[in-house]
Amino acid sequence: MLIDERAVSQSEHSGLMYRVANGTQFGGQPTTGANGDLTAMFVPGGIYVTFSGHDVRWPDGQQLQRIGLQPDFPVAPTIQGLRDGRDEVLEKAIAVVRGRL
Image 1: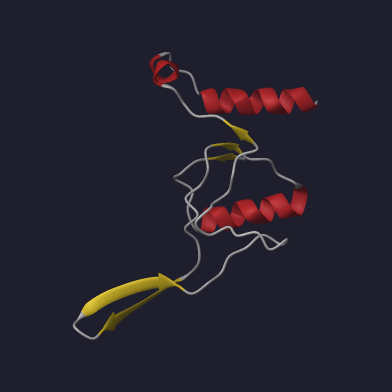
Image 2: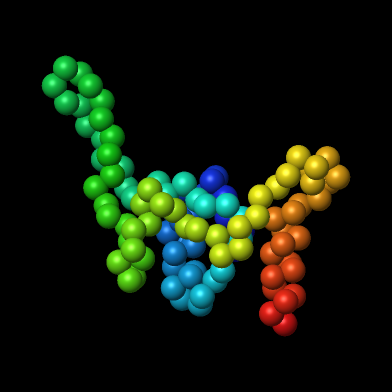
């Protein structure tokens, strides 16, 4: 599964479930680590506050919130790759898959 900082909340939960269900590997960059339902309320003084009341963890107890999904094979796009019209993240993922076949 390709991941990066744009993955947040439900997509992080999905990644966690895929990993636990079938050992899915992650490639790319770490996700945001911002998951859990939000609670919102006004406090005295008219201040609007939002916070998460969940503690999202891996089945072994490791924290997921504020850490995010970490890639098994880290790779990031480069300026040169973009100029050349290449998707270096996808290329690396294909190489990883082919290396296992």
